[in-house]
Length: 487
Image 1 (cartoon, rainbow, N blue to C red):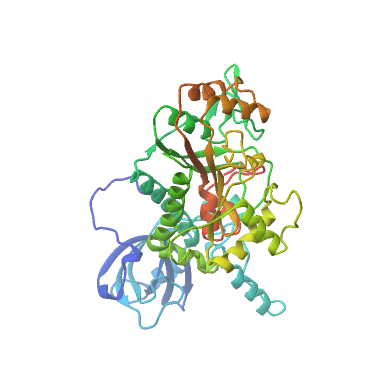
Image 2 (cartoon, rainbow, N blue to C red):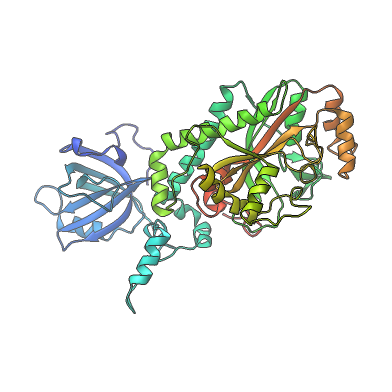
């Protein structure tokens, strides 16, 4: 146990910094014991791990520093224990396939146990790091009575999340997730957006929906915010022309799909425009093109780490860097052409369901060579009350969704900024403009408000679809759904 008794000493090294160029150097490093294998009484092989990186370490008995007792002790260390190792770097005579450092190894001179893991773990990190393909192959190749690789189920992983998060794949996923936030912020800061923080405890179910969490608030009732939407618009009316927020979003949806959670991280933005809402739409398109391009450049190592466990075709963007955009009518035409939706009087005013969205994605990839695209001009009836109708055909609206691999990652629109028209639309949707939580919102527009538009992005949805993880829970550190409140 380290109680911080010493403040100075030799600097600790990182596994990712080891290479044949350091042959003969003595290094000191702290790492997890990922695996170990005894080779007789005089030699043990250890696999040491730090985050995404691993290196082979050899403990071999000699006259100078390593006894046979030390070799035996090392072989008996429980996996996932934290060890402090002093060792000499050696160029490896052959490529080491089991480690991320394939061309160098460590020859241990000293080793200390800093934090011991239990002998029996809920599962092995090595098992939790294997691809489904490798598991299936082991099952197919195993003869009767033989053992095969263990499949660690998602619920087992989430019930033991700290252990599961140690896998190199998970470290890569959440480095990429942090990168999405960082690139999102960088892009918007460079374009004069201001970061904001809006209340997450609100006095009413203010957007008129029913998917709110209700909670006691002293002698009153309160709700957890479903989005920062109304506050973003109020700030536009307060002459903050470009705002964004990253923060928690709560949805009381009793849904168990692969892409829904009851709490997730929202990346929201709102922006006033000069003449046309496409000024905002094009800004968000540029944001995503920049985001995906930067992820592929900055996080190439992490993406390759994830692909080893979750193999997927490379993420495709248009070769010319220009986003692919359709109107809702054009998207429906594609659905009808490929037999995904049947032609009817209601075909062009009925929203797409999840099955249609997911079927459209591969078609767009094949015909337009992109995994990212935009659909504009959704039917007015399927959008919220604050959505501006299309000026030429009010059956449709100035609204848009962004899609990744055939699934929605952003929903947005031009908002109604005229108070009289806004109240008219609210009443048409059965929403009282004088109702709790809405009067202040409407009053802001009565003070004069510029035209504006924006959108809301789900961070975890972007990450799980970009990496094609199959389930959004894999992109959340500690996911919440209708049946999960821990850890």
